[in-house]
Length: 478
Ligand code: ADP
Image 1 (tube, protein in one colour):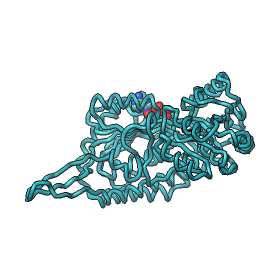
Image 2 (cartoon, helix red, strand yellow):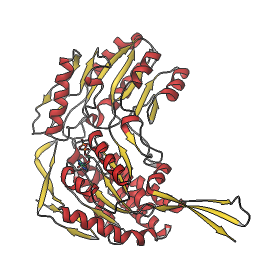
Image 3 (cartoon, rainbow, N blue to C red):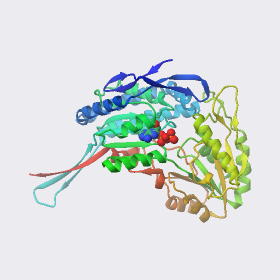
Image 4 (cartoon, rainbow, N blue to C red):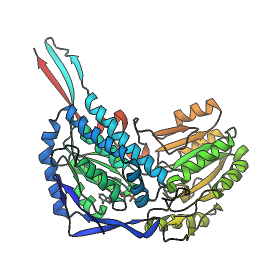
């Protein structure tokens, strides 16, 4: 089996231990052994980044553009191959895998341009003969920690702006899906970065992730993952006054009003709730439906769900691939059992599937006649499970949508302009979708949420600069 080393100070470095990466569609298929960085190697990576940071901070915008543009071009050119690998290790369909790779390439292209456009401000001082320049400067060394569900896009949307704005990076991908991240690191290793400006240490969060966040000299940590770990990292960052950016879970509502076009609303719900096996922090997990359309919507959704094909992620006929691993499978099954115990009606799915190969296949699952107080409507499940919550009218729908500890994405299906407008203004979420799935976002605009979903400044688009730079105000007397 091929062994994949860490990338530290411009060199590929193996470790005594390694983790095997399995294909969740067929667990007989072992993708490779990925080195698990030792604590000493994590420290070496941070030291290398600290050493390289001043040089990379002094690089010209053209040099940064060239690195990011080259990475973006190669990722786009290898979209099919990398998309296949991504689907093989993560379990999302091939179309989704290639789409994600394309997105990663586009993100690098976008931030290549942003490196050129990084601007400051120039003002006259209130004092005569004095001018003020406001400059944006890199933070220094940033640690980037990413989850398994978008194994190339999330690394891209952290690494690209970090490098574009002159920071040195130590990157820790998720242990469940490191192959896409490894390919990205391999591409970056050939794009003209000075040694140490980009480093990757792989392995488990409890070991390598924890060791990384404890390192001295890191100026910022950008993390995407669970609420529990995010909060723990934030605590540590508060203690040390390290800048932190967290993207965590969601319990995203999709409101369907009486006047919504039925077929379109069903497609939006299916896409948001079940595509990528529901393993998206923007997945629609609570579908809030007004009485007048409830029965018709429920029937149409159940009918549509029957047509969804669960299977091997690499099979072009598949609509929904496996969940990522046994632990995730057990977690989702636990919530399905909990939903039953809470008195929700299991209207579709609910079972693990045994196909012709060993994998983590789960039926898309729908609970109906639920209420918002149930744990299945309060806690993130992160699998192909959605609930229907009946409500009387729009106002109740909005109240239920907002009655959650999370606030990442929220959607509404309606032809009623006033409701759409009101919802956009009053829903408490970082993303508001009108007649669109709660999941599926552009690469050139900010991404993030409110309440328990996110902490710190926004990621992506032009807003990414807020996290990856610090502001210097310069006064000059002429
Ligand atoms: P998920 O439930 O999506 O796996 P986690 O929060 O467990 O979410 O993991 C997200 C990322 O954080 C992964 O790269 C994981 O290895 C890392 N991680 C997990 N535990 C820690 C920790 N204690 N310190 C730092 N990183 C961690």
